[in-house]
Length: 222
Image 1 (cartoon, rainbow, N blue to C red):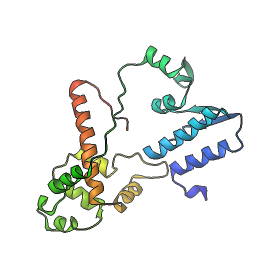
Image 2 (image 1 turned 120 degrees about the vertical axis):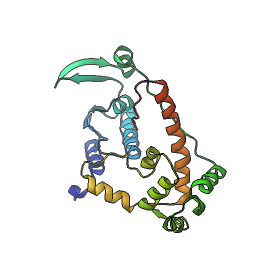
Image 3 (image 1 turned 90 degrees about the vertical axis):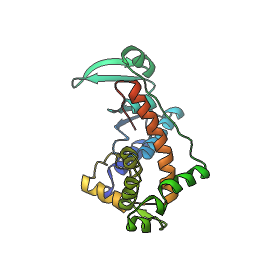
Image 4 (image 1 turned 45 degrees about the vertical axis):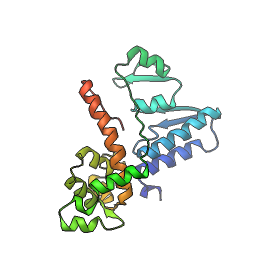
């Protein structure tokens, strides 16, 4: 039965099995690998709760510095297949070896008037010329293909379209590209959801664009 689960759900099951009985030491190998951002945050809360309750000591390995910093009170970095490079608190390691800055940006959800403004300017039948798209905009739910065509016709930036359609999500361990594409095509969107995403993600990517103009190297982690 477990073999039919997605990569992310297999990770959740593995963590659940590891914490049964509250053993004194729990070993976790990349516990959030293959998970979407929401599931990853949930997994981090579970592991953090175990550590804060002090019922078990948690030792985990990960390639994600964000995950290591979020979950660890002490961390070590190994390079070249096992050479122990450094050990200490996350802040100590960042102070000694880190370069650059990590910026977390949170956007406030738009009020209904702002959502209505986006719908009138981008998601109204008058905003597109194609008769099929005009008809699609009168429906309660739009397919991913219809949503992509409408946003493209309305000249919404491609990076925002990819984010709305979740094209930038990482594949689960058990998924291939064809399976992931089929999953995206099965999704449906309401006009209200699309308008909210355009407003929020458009604002966020505007900030990212400004940062890219100010700094040489900018990497979007999530």
